[in-house]
Length: 537
Image (cartoon, rainbow, N blue to C red):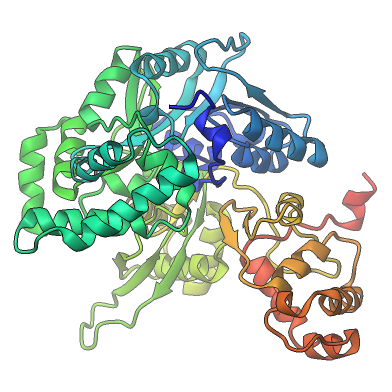
């Protein structure tokens, strides 16, 4: 193989991941009794940070926190450093280094994250990461480590082994990708039908062919090192370094709600009160392929089960919809369906409740999405809407338990100090500085302020977001957007033929501008505009 570092030879796509956001990690920690640092005043290390997109978003959202990213790729760190300097982020350091040789300073980290790292590095580097977590993690700190999981990856490993054999000796990334895709197409078509093996191979080959970003195929599936682990094996490795399993970042994955009711007693019997054994048997049932595991120090006083009352200090968000009540049921129960809105959340999670305050609260959460709502504000609105006559403590207790249940089922997300964004465009809307910088660099998929990844599917949307620097009112936006669209080549302006004048674009865009700005707000791309008083302080 070539001596060029693979991630310098071919760029890996940058993403922000809600699952490893400190607002989620802190929320999970607090549910389990840990006095986790607030995201607004924390120290966070990301190992294998790539170009640091996740850290750039965090550093913008939490100016009083300190963020450090380390990666071996010179090119990725250089890209991130360019963005860091353009954004003026003094609370972020991006370091190009080999983790095995890197020496952190003596200050502890409240959060350590390593996504897409553990399964793809040699065993000694995995050990080094765990040792680093033990050495530098704060007393109530949390480490997030993702990895390919067993037993699900046994199936994918059939095709990985075939790909490694077929692509042996092909070093050039483009040639290696082409070679692999050609083989996958042949494999899916030529495998004889009629046996379970054939169905598995066709499914696995087809899934890999559907990867839209070929660099993911190159780095994830054609990697020379790709070591899946069971949860019990990973936990044993962590325990050897004084670390313990806390939870999964995708918290709903620990729930047995997806199992048939008759399967749950058997699971409980097999686990026999052992949390890790329960997780292992769940993985056997689900065919789990990927884990995003949270670790804490072994001596940390972890509360189990989760403490519902801790939700009173958190925010809730979820893409919820009320379903029609069952005809003739007469019990007043309403079913809510939805998800937390994160990429890993359960898309068909449901919660049924006959409690009027909980019903009102879930309605409020759904209508406010993607905006997270603080518990106390949510409780006040829900009590007023439902005209509750119960005591505030009774309603708070019921709501806290319902929010925890919704989080456990993937119906909603819980957050500690979530990042802020605007729910309405305002008079002079300003889009995320990071998103505008990404668009300037040619990206069409950008980091929102939630954060999440948002794809802009038209040139018009790209041009509009780039104009939202907070200096233009709606009239100026309309004028400048019309000028921009008129100046584009015909093939660039969303298929409008022939090229149109600025006057035509102005007339065409006038009725659409407000909708476009509202969509930007709904995608959490707009910053909160400071009040006149805030601007002068």
